[in-house]
Length: 327
Image (cartoon, rainbow, N blue to C red; front, side, top):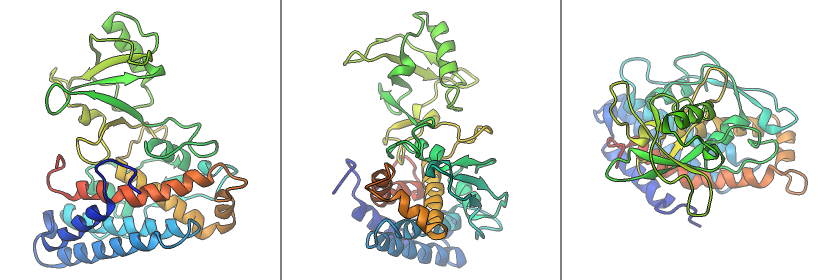
């Protein structure tokens, strides 16, 4: 079953494997980096396939290690100097709370850990303070939020890009955040910045544009754009990155903690899968409870998340590995 238009996991997996013969970046030269790149991507694919052959009780363990090995390949290709081989996971997962989404996810502070180096390979900062599985879950726009797993957390906010060229420099915010804004654009921008306080990338340079304040179905709507310190228009994807390529939507990511940390989509997946994997390995009884369809509202969203990950991650990873991020 294909859940996402333009995403075919089998084709994407094949294209990732094709990179092994012509690795990107620092893995292109012969030597240890190239060998690690190829071997790690071989393990990524084997583990990804194996994760579909076992039930959700064990699936996140294999799926996490698949993405972890893909991260090793990315580090070999992207991180210059030493070290480029990671050690330790880099995140510690707390014991499960009453609600599974309250499980804490905290950095261990090691700069050479797998998660910290994976974030570096993505060109992003790592976590600097603890967050929760629920907050990570809500920041992933493709996962269903339910009570006890993301329902009380700030979700990723999808924007509607308004394209008058490439890349788009204007977007629409549709829904409650756009309701009852002042008619004056300056006053509307001030109020909207306040409403978007949970989205760190949204405040600087935000301006409200002229345009309809009501959507096609009568919902509140406001058009916005962003400018840099020199007054130059920013592309929407610079403020609200897509899931993979620049043509994969636009999403404002919420702060994950009081430190205001924001993670790229692929790093969010990494952290979520580590948390699920740890719960499955070290707390199998609680994990079984969370997967109980007769008793737990989290069961179906978790099952769906694992299926979504298997389909979407090859596509996201492929775009992250390609030299041209717009490809």
